[in-house]
Length: 321
Image (cartoon, rainbow, N blue to C red; front, side, top):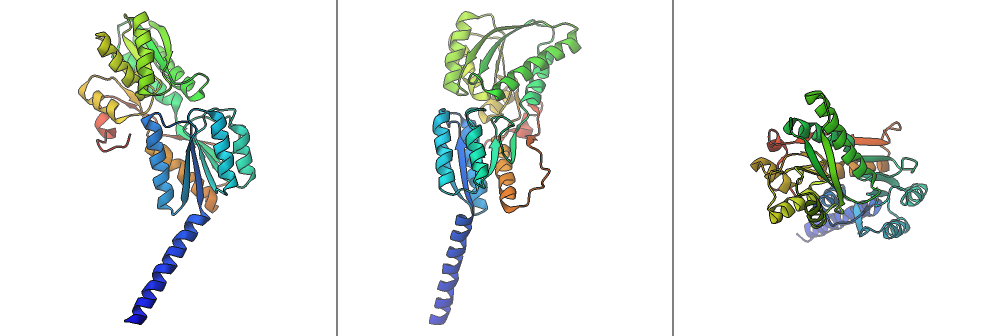
């Protein structure tokens, strides 16, 4: 019996050593622009789970909307010997040098969700197709509002964000093209633009100002669901009715529930779990030397518009996001 106990103890010790070695052999750094939106929190959960499933040790940093802090966070991660960096950049230009520094140090850098200047030396950039999702949502809006002059309010994330620009221009392109196809003319007014910093509270405050200046608006489009959910609250508080709400991207659970009940129009497919897992998987394969040399520098997840007719395909009541 004592011999069996000794063997078992030795096996347990060996397993613990092996697990520790696995963790030490695979160190991951994850840096986010902020955690003030549910989408970002869901992305973190996805990457952390994927890393832990592979036995990797992971360090996560919140830059708190400060690109200088994000640069410092990445530099600290490099100094600690990370093997993989999953970078969701706060600024498309400011993070280029530190991404290059990480690559030069032998770190496999994968850019996730937000855009980084393509001149950066990274394995790839993983995100949803902002332009295509926006275009599909815009086309849906044009069909939904056929025959009505569109008076639109626009909720944007933060100034200078290339992903936000792609999303709003995609929606505008989809509306214009849809109206031309369906009606032979364009009848679209963009009454105003507000900056909501990607959050529900930010969207609420921006929408309050916009509704006060433009109470005749009949469409609110946001660059993500969180800001539009804030706009829905602002409209209710102001007693405004007859407004169509739509987002260029995300598929947040609360938005999908409102789409099901008919109080929210549509949103674009931007699954944070899929984007996060895909970014890690690519980084891990690069770390293991299993990624093809000709792997594309931009990897886009599938695009779709989520509306009442297909919302059940995407709605998950247990979703983190």
